[in-house]
Length: 319
Image: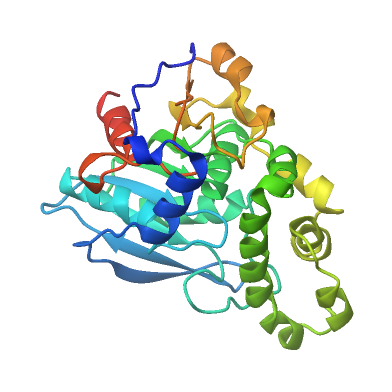
């Protein structure tokens, strides 16, 4: 499909990337959503916690919401779309990736941008309930890359999967990592690394044969983290092998489900390769919208409903 023209116009104070990104991550609040937790036991002995919220009337439609790096199902960028879809007759299943629900996961491995086996387990679990005829996925940041990779890396997806919405999608993980490591994003990179290392630290005592104190102390940057932990824990050779194999960009040509990518042009986390213009033009199922503003998951709009949330609802309703 041709690249879509965006109609997003932020309030004047939210045009700067830093302002919209930080406000949305630290100041936004979403009230009035009741979530009920379900634990999904995985075949490898680990678990994923799912936080459900429901429409006012029984629904045969559900949206799966996937959070970003070091996020969880209570972040406003997750609860915002969950509430909007609930208010419009769609149930919501907000996924907490392994180790992100407030409890350390059981295995040495955890989650990463390309862990589509976990998304597949969630979708299978939901379909086994035999309630939902239509399933949508909304992924944010890391979750956006995962959703797109899931749809494009396999020849078939469940017939119930009708749409994907990917917001602030780092389609090229290497490109996105390079941006995060640049000086302009130093404050973000420090914050992410601090959270990642705090979560990794308990695994020092859980799995001393797999992670030494020396290794842990040598992690000084996000790429160090991916070299020393992410890649080794999840079967990749090193960070670069992980970035190469887990990036969704290479899988976009094979996507057969209507998929909307919303990446702001002023998103400081995204490199040029994260704007898949060619892939969108060559695949009728991939819709690319590149608003001028919005930062990283910062599409501030009226009534505390974000532009990307309204666009997601519009997208699934027009199918």
